[in-house]
Image (cartoon, rainbow, N blue to C red; front, side, top):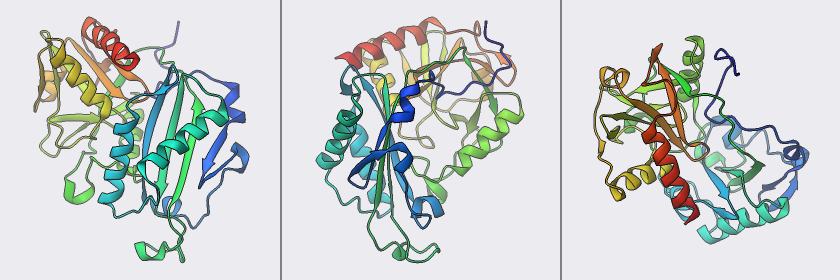
Length: 302
């Protein structure tokens, strides 16, 4: 039996020795892991100036690949970053990396694009003169989360668009990292983050849902990542007659929920067992979460 004191993350996976031998796509070259390097002058390393996507491989197909690539290009346009490839070329780079690694299922790709190598080590975007840096890390990855996640509410907020728009999947993740650290200091696995009005919003790594009396609730979406898996769960609810609401709700609503779960590309739907020391429902995966998992699995297979 797993000790409940053991740390758990929403991106916990089985150990796989094959990941020491993976090949990584770096600016058009597929190289061994030990040779996959970028410059210390790279904008992503120096300033967190870049955008990224996480994509999962199921039974030979990348789930919702077109939507992930579309979101990548939207984010790049928002920060005035020229990816210098077409969406079709980005997709081909993913397929080439998959073929080089011989992967067919249970793989996760992290696709990263930064503004590239800087001429001098300062902030201004014009100092990035060599074109973008693009990297694809693809690992054998089967989720292994031994128990429902424990969350702690933290003071770090999902902020307003005029500071750093939370809809951007940017390399600048320090706010979420600080939130995660605060949650771990409080004895939880990850952080539950509120919006600027004090309503429950998201976690530091995933989107957040609760279930109350047969209804599925999630935030309005105004302050959370534009999650593809989040959107699929909302769609599945609507297609299958499950009442679903994008609305403001408070910690009072959350603590008394029948179930809570997280959504994300890696873990799909991850049950939450405890929030701020309060057991949610039975403390285990609830029937609605289990049903949505089955519906999502069928959607991916289709």
